[in-house]
Each structure stands twice: as structure tokens, then as C-alpha cells.
Length: 195
Image 1 (spheres, one colour):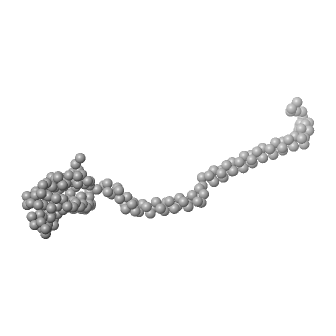
Image 2 (spheres, helix red, strand yellow; image 1 turned 90 degrees about the vertical axis):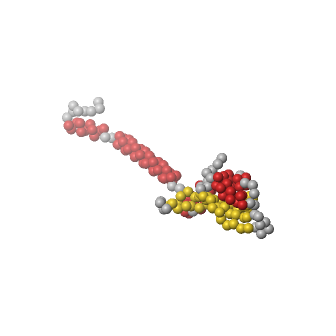
Image 3 (cartoon, one colour; image 1 turned 45 degrees about the vertical axis):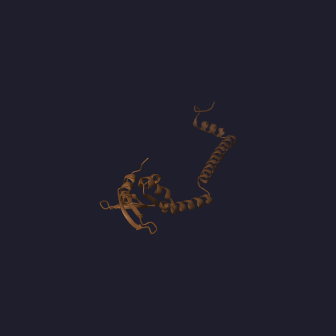
């Protein structure tokens, strides 16, 4: 019989006193102690795992110093990005290599090409007050051996190159060859690229 609820109150109290033996109290205390130790062990394990995770996520001092150095170097490089990348600037400019291929033929008979120079200029658009696409200025220095060749040279160069404007620059008579004239032809504008 596990309970004595049919007994009178005094008998029931005595019955309960008899059940409260030191052995049962010791077992209960031991069970409570085991539960407490288990929960404490789990808490320590959880704290250990949390500390390891925090330690794994935080970088060491060497990598933090290296990262700061890289960020500083990247900031300095970004300031000079325009000057450090001349290839992009060059590729943005108009192409003129194809002009050199047949320039001597385009000048015609009686003209000898001595020198070719080019430079890039940004033209300012007065309506928008900002720079436009860079234009190529091509300066061809040639020897014209006859008046007809000299007069046809600007027209021939404009037709061949596809430039917008052409003007005759510096001219001079050659000392040893009085029949020949050295002339500079200035072509400006964005040429139409031919294939």
C-alpha cells in the first residue's frame, strides 16, 4: 500500500514520517546533485564553444595590421587611378594607325612625306562648357616638287583621312632644291576610321 488515505490523520502523519527515511533523502540529494553537475557541465561546454567561435571570428593582430596597410595603400592608389592607367586613356583616344599605312600613296606623285606627328586635343563645346571627345591633330611635313602637287596635297589628305579641317602651316623653300617646297599640313578633327 502506497498511501494510507483511509487512516486517521495521526496515523497518516506517522506513516509519512516512516517513509521519510535517510536513505530516501540521500538518494534524492544525490539525484539533485547529479542534475546540478550535469547542467553546470553543459553550461561550461556552451561557454567554451562560444569562446572558441568568438576567437575564430576575430582576426589575429598580424592580419588586422596587414588589412589596415592594404586599405591605406588602396586609398592612395585610388587617388592616382587616372595617372596609373594610361592604357585606358590611350584606348579612349581616336585611332590613327590606319592613316600611316597608305599616307605616302594618298599624297600622290611629286610629294615626299618627311615626317608625321600627331597630338590629342580636347575641344571645349561653348554650349555645354565641358570637354568633348579628344580630337586628333595630325601634322604632315612633306616635300612638294611641283605647284600642282602642292595645291592638291591638302585636298588629297582630307579625302584620304576623313578629317574635318585642313590648313597649311609653315612652308619653306629648300636651299639645295629651289623647285621643291617643304610644307606642313595640319589636319584636325576626329577621323573616320577605315577598315
